[in-house]
Image 1 (cartoon, helix red, strand yellow):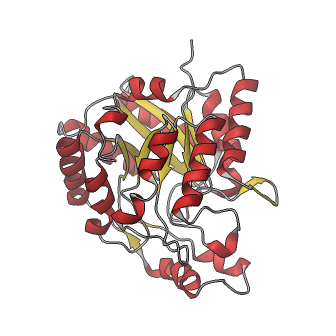
Image 2: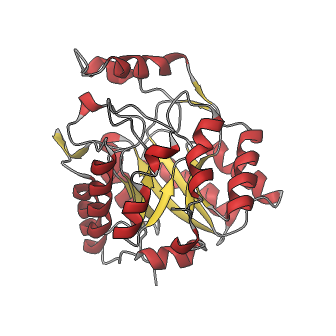
Image 3: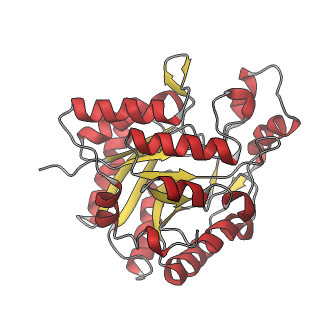
Length: 309
């Protein structure tokens, strides 16, 4: 029988800016509200970034994270997954500050340095609510999102070995799967691996169905039965790629970090909107959605009682 589908919801992220949608949760209160609603709608894992509550810009400040992490934990049994990617341009030390303080069950971990181009979004808006938004987007035209072998090793040792945190391995291209296999071969990563294949970011693999098939084939050849596969796709590709992945036995990730829309030209009013839609699709395919505790068991997580918030 197929495994139940684990739904991850990426609640706010560090890519989209306040001008792009009034529904992006920016303040700790908004992040708490949207996270709880997404969990109630069916998300087993909540992937979280922090924003400066004054202007919505991405922040690595652990104190801001601690304004919402304990409250989400108190109101939900969802797995809390904290970013180590942070925001574009943050140092590795900044990106690790909140995870090292909070010692979460899960963190994201990007598996390679890459161009990460979101500057084409500039063409869609004639003006911005905050000055930082335009600079944030333009910065990515001459920017490399740095995740060297040494960076990855440091995160695995400091968070993985030091805190018992496990990872959502974010693979934006085929080479990232081989990088993951490299660390597996070195014994720094133990199964089960949670492999998040990402499609549609400028600089990474495109959101083509053939690419999804290829990423699955390569992951199977590298990891066999030792991994849990998940799919996310940027923007308009979100639901179609996640649906195809679910049909192929994968798990899915949705949320306003990855796409601001619920359907063509229609903004999602909340993260829960997207979770509700993908859950309905999954169940219409005669598949079941995993609970948080089922996700914990399959991913060998340490449990919510072992975190520092």
